[in-house]
Length: 115
Image (cartoon, rainbow, N blue to C red; front, side):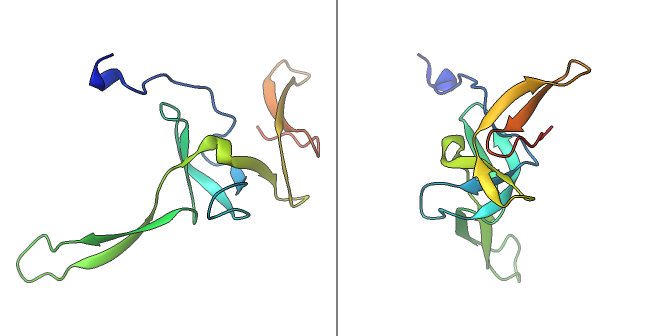
């Protein structure tokens, strides 16, 4: 397999950008945050306030000072569960159809419709 196609299988993820999730494993276990970006090609997501990395940036012009930038790094989508703000509980996800025929995501513990 050529290097450019390595890891290029696009997988279907249970989370989307804008969802509220709770981290269930790793150093940030228990933290709740909003998904900022989904990267389906790698099955990874960016969660606000989770997996913070510090990066030292050199000055770009003469006379400017360097700075330390903190930013979120991606985590694997399997390390998060969808979180219900109303019930304050994390839950697995199921799929069902509404009366008008739309397929929607549902929290299994609470029955709350997400989409």
